[in-house]
Image (cartoon, rainbow, N blue to C red; front, side, top):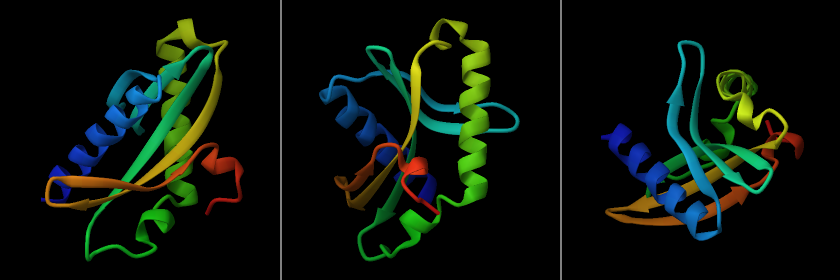
Length: 123
């Protein structure tokens, strides 16, 4: 069931980003070594977004703390592999964002959205 909640949270964040003017390039983008939940573009900016979704009642600091240094490296590797496979975006500015979402039934709420999360003393 956790996978269903995670996928629904990612879809919800994708809609949120689209409403903010971002174009979703990839969802659940994976290679053998890495994965990125969402990749989006706006003008000359690419964002690589990690989405953490928790059910109401199961929320703790786990959303924030689950983006460990190891996970950050995995997302950065995924970003490098995405850029290698899609050289059209090689000159875009890139950043790493984290979206933390609370889920209650089919209702989702963005509890925190951190742009440039890896550059802001995360982890």
